[in-house]
Image (cartoon, rainbow, N blue to C red; front, side, top):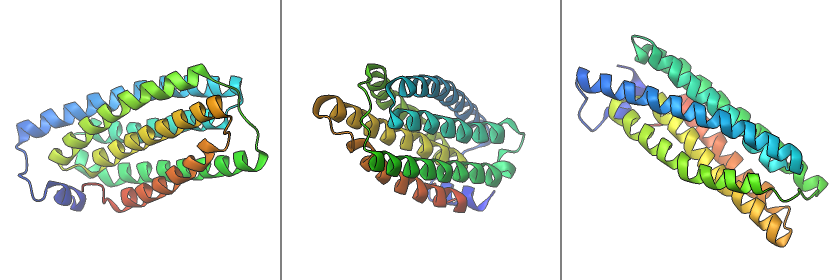
Amino acid sequence: MTAGEADCCAPGAVPDDGRKALLRRRIRWLVAGTITYNVIEAVVAIAAGSVASSAALVAFGLDSVAEVLSAVAVAWQFAGADPERRERAALRVIAVSFFLLAAYVAGDSVWSLVRSEAPEHSTAGIVLAAVSLVIMPVLSGAQRRAGRELGSASAVADSKQTLLCTYLSAVLLGGLLLNAVFGWSWADPVAALVIAVVAVREGREAWRGDHCC
């Protein structure tokens, strides 16, 4: 048992081998669902963002790419016969995806504020953000519960990456609506800067393996 697993399992009971096998299968299915949805999300967001000249939408699509990278790392971990041996490597990949996401979102947000260029209205972007607000919390919650019971820091870290995508969905939706209704083009980059700070914190926790609380 890894140090991260020990932390995740305390103070609850350690599941038996049958329960562990069930939880690992559940995590694999949840990760597969996360990857599938995020690929679709990335394609739609980047395409809609390019049409509307929306930096926020394009950034949201790239966040989905980072989410796929995180989920693939967990899928790789649980594809092995001994997932615990691969946990540290998976956590490092997840941490790097957080850092890359934070760097891009921060840079893009600052650039959007500097140039003060208002994006066009995007109905597709608003619908996508609203759908993500419904789907992402469900995937994140299910994976976090399974990861905590199994004692997998990487599964919990990936669930937090998914939850961060939920926050970004809310930021994106708010920004698109404020821009469409009031013409406040600065709203979403300012909120996205807050998300970037959160992403850095989550990345540091993933790097240390502190994602089980």
